[in-house]
Image (cartoon, rainbow, N blue to C red; front, side):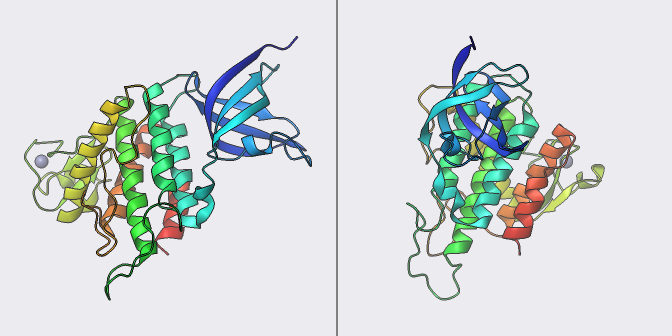
Length: 297
Ligand SMILES: [Zn+2]
């Protein structure tokens, strides 16, 4: 008799396994990250298809298999279909999944991280074309159009997610003043993945991998870090995170958010944070290169 168990999960990845199966990488509320098999999911009329899609949030029922747990059935809680809305958004969601895999060990539950993961998927989905927010509105001449506003919001959500995840896991970078000399950084600076955070101009040379940031990017990093601190703290309480927690949507007229989100600085900060994750995980984030190819094209 197989032994069944149930988890609340987000599917981080779903890839072919053998003839007709898929290997799912799940992040679950109860047991953290683990792999499971969706047997026969690529056969016509499989009842598991809707559960084996990337980013689906579901209550899953699994049975303990000889090598891997197998998916028996489940109930979709949030399909996050809006994430399929455009290639840049899909790529951003894949960065989230990649960061989540890179920073976590197998079968180490972390309810805060699980809640943060649901939060970022909801925020990203809200930027989907024609979705709830960021609806195209008549913009003055010269203002960034809706696609750019969505990108500003998406990189902002990515950066805040990465910063909050790092805080929750206990290795958040130092962002409010210089990580080396602790002097305030008011103008331009750099982000040192090896140094562990923000560097003032006088210390930037100490980390050869440091990424230069202009003054607007430094301010943005600091604002996003404060938003992430708020999120990381609230993620400890049960009941989920409100979508608006910590950040605000870009103004449809100017494309600039009240949190200071801007372009191309937002992308520069997100890139610096992905380099930091790579340093921690000791592996490249391939998903970030894909995002750059699509969003910066
Ligand atoms: Zn310094």
